[in-house]
Length: 569
Image (tube, rainbow, N blue to C red):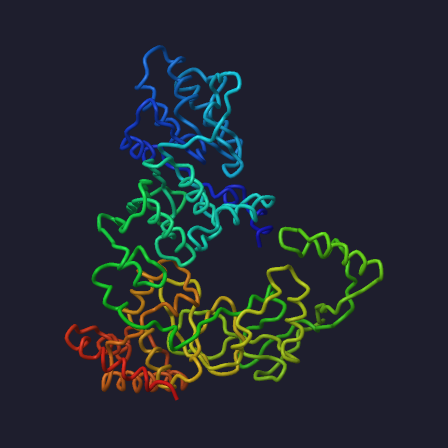
């Protein structure tokens, strides 16, 4: 997958979203500098931040333009830019505005993760004086989002920047830019970044949020409109490196660590009115959620059902596939094999060793197959329906999926695992992975699971009625609000996001029994042909049944805790 990312269009590969100059100018105008300050722009593009930074420092010096510009670019303003075309464009803009480019300056055409900014770079140094890394007073800019790391160093970067305070930080360009920038700030320094808002809630950025709070004071402000290049929500992150901090400020509201800690994902989107819902157990106590399988070639194995039939265009044949070093390197992660592994494969190649593989032979005419059929299993692909949808796809699964699993074993390194295998064919609930809402559906027994439609299954020893109670909860707008505002506000709804949802402990006794009865009836009606929508009476009634009423909720807490003990068989 990393290799595939390197083949994307240049702009996407670099993660480039150029900052409009007016936005960059406004952010720079709010910063105060002295002649002693050193400012870094780690991915300056064509100069949106660099130009106003130079302008601001120029006003601190006396003398002619060339003299002042030379001092600014040798003493105060530093930067790096990977894209040669953007780098050249920035230098041309500087020359156009001031009529001059100093021979020596601190603007580097290179990868930020490979750059070393030294204190005497661009200045005359005394004989014997040693260079040392710059500790910056300010770091500003718009780090790349969703970009590609240099394959030669990405594993080393993961080791260097991917863990802080014992917590994992997602290997994403903007998050690693933030981590390295925090390292390069001097104590008391300030970071000002425009970046994706994804780091505010997603669990894989929990380590980044923790790092920022452990080293300073963070303020985040939503950016209403960034540019026409992207509709993705962006924020301004302002960070002062002044030591451990017990709070963050999000859009003017102060959030305290003790409240953030109530959310399993250390969310920076928790609000005071939502804290009460997190004062109890999570759904993960009752259900285990999992992603499904990445086939790596759905068009080869997955068929859409039409009028109870499918068309099968292939015959599946097995053959002995010779093992070669070139093939194994092409399938390996980052195209790399350990020397001992490469040596072993070369020996196997010289001996003519082969492995069992599968090929797809196109039929002259597709074979019509009536469903159900023992060679096919229903396949759980995502959709926007709620409550239940009849089977729409099947996957070729003869001999327990021998063809699919053989194909995956011989594919690229990231295909070889079988996600959710232990839960294949089990009854559960499921939802669409990429969606603005949790479109929860009943999943009968017998399905093979797809990665685009995560699922949750009742844990062993939990009473079956809990399944229907949780199912009803997942249909409510309140549950969706907690999911999309606090746990993961992006379009992805991962399996573990579901487990992190609050269990509705505030609903107990008769109200809980009503919910269970309502949901059982809805699933039965849906399997008999009824199509439910979120504005249907039954789903609207669930909203009322799951409403948090302060007095009743308090009295239900003890009752609910007693019920938890009885949930086990």
